[in-house]
Length: 86
Image (cartoon, rainbow, N blue to C red; front, side, top):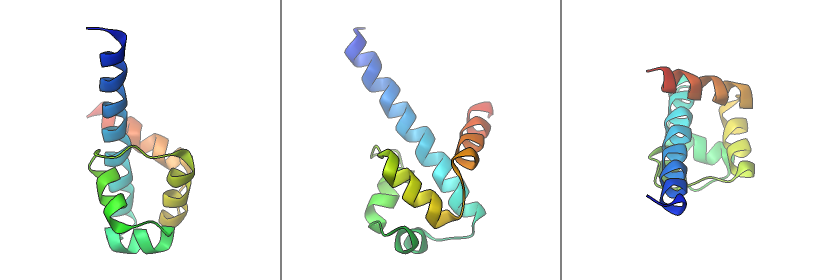
């Protein structure tokens, strides 16, 4: 396997991990995807794609989502750690 394939696989796994963590934080905040999208100023379809690991997400978008959730980067990091420990 070459480095390009490995990088692509790693990126896909990262997208899934971030998406799962954002979904868990959204559930913890008792928000629907629609409510989070509205609070964050992001299209609900995009929120769904991010949560399902089908879309990568840029840093400024992560920050908008976290603000919409009322959570911090450390909350996201802790949730990613919890997901990895499963």
